[in-house]
Image (cartoon, rainbow, N blue to C red; front, side):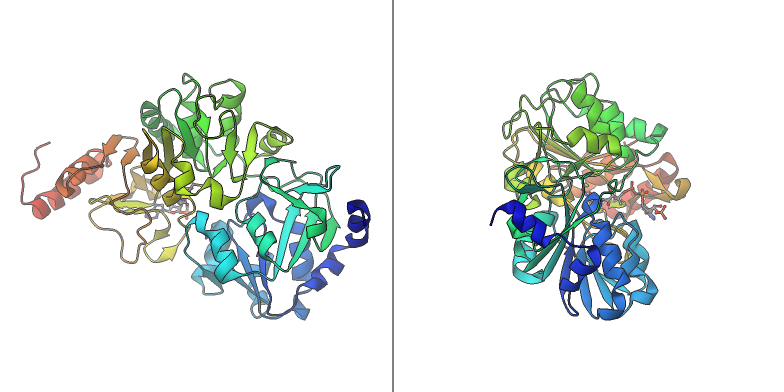
Length: 434
Ligand code: COA
C-alpha cells in the first residue's frame, strides 16, 4: 500500500482517534508549542469514558483543561516540568511532578515511563510520506517511537523543520487534520535590570562562541547586547524570537562551530508566529531529539560553548536553586544542568547563571546565606561557574567557600549586603574587608 493510501485510510475525526486511548493508559503529550490541542480537547470531551489515564507532559503552554478539578479520577497529570499552567494543580496534589534531567527523558520513556499512546502534532506529509515534528522534537519523537499507538494532529501551521525530526506516515495510527496557529509565547518586556545583566553576560562572550540561551527577558536582553559580536553559533535547548535578528544580521552564523558548523541546533522552539515562520523549511535550523542536543558529551564537542540560564536563589556557597520557592515547585531543572555540564566539557566553555539580585519588587534577596527550607539544589556548587546580576559578575570556579561568599556579596543588591557581610563574618571568623 502506498503511503498516500495508508494516510487516507487512517485519517479520521478527533473524536474517533481518541477512542484509541483506553482507561489506565499512559499518554504522552507533544511538548510546548507542539501540543496537539485538537486531540487534547477531544480527549477531555470524552473524559466520562476514561478513568485513570496518566498524562506525561513537560512545558504546558495550552489551557491544561485536563488539570481542572472536575477531571480528578479521569486524568492524572505527571509533569516533567512545572510550568505556570501546572503549578496550582501540583501544589494542590491533583498532579504529580517527576524530577529528571531533560536529556534523560527519552531514556525514561523507554525504560520507566513507557507510554501506551503518544499524542503529537506534525506538519503535513512531504512527497516521500515523512511528517516533521517541527518545533517540538525534544522528548516528543522518543515518546512517539516508544508508544504502542501514535495519534497525530496534522496541522499546516506546524513548521516543516529540518534535522533528525521526522516520522513516517506509516508509523502513525491515526491522523486528525486540524489547522490552527501554534500557541505563541510573545517576547517579554526588557527593563533596566535585564539590560544591565545582559551587558555583563555579553562581556563574557567572545566572537566565535557557541551559545545556549533559555527563555524569557534575560536571554533576550543578552541577545540585544551581542550586536557587535561576530560568527557566533547556536547549540541550544531552545531559542526564541530574540535570535532571529542576530541571525539575519550575520552576528550568529555558526561558521566557527566545531559541531554542525553553519547550523543552528535546537531541540524545541517557542516564540511568536515570526519565529515559526522563520524556522519553516529553513535548512540552517537543525532540530534533533533532546537526548542528542542536551547530552553533555555532545554539547561539549562545541568549543567555546557558553550557557546562560537563570535561577530562583543562590546560597553563599554557590548552591543554585532554579526550580522551587522553598518546597513549592515552580519550575524544573529542564536543560540547565545538561548545559552547565556540557559547557564544562567544552574547550574554552563557560556557564553563566544570570539572575536579578532581588525578587518580589526588591523585598527579597536572591543571594541568601542558606537556601529556603525545602528548596531544591538544581545546580550544585561543584558545577556552578559564573553568577551574573545587575551588579556584576561573580566567578566561583575554583574558589574557596570564603572567596565565593565574598564574590557573591559583591553582586548582591546593596540593601542586603550588610546582612550578608554579617553572616560572612560569623561564618568565616573574619572581618569583612573587601
Ligand atoms: N523568592 C521568592 N519568590 C521568588 C524568588 C525568590 N528568590 N525568585 C523568583 N520568585 C518568584 C517570582 O516572584 C515569580 O513569582 P510569580 O510567578 O508569582 O510572579 C516566580 O517565582 C518566577 O520568577 P521569575 O523571576 O519571574 O521567573 P523567570 O521567568 O525569570 O524564570 C526560572 C526564572 C529560574 C524559574 C527559570 O529560568 C527556570 O525555570 N529555570 C530552570 C530551567 C532552566 O534553566 N532551563 C534551561 C533553559 S530553557
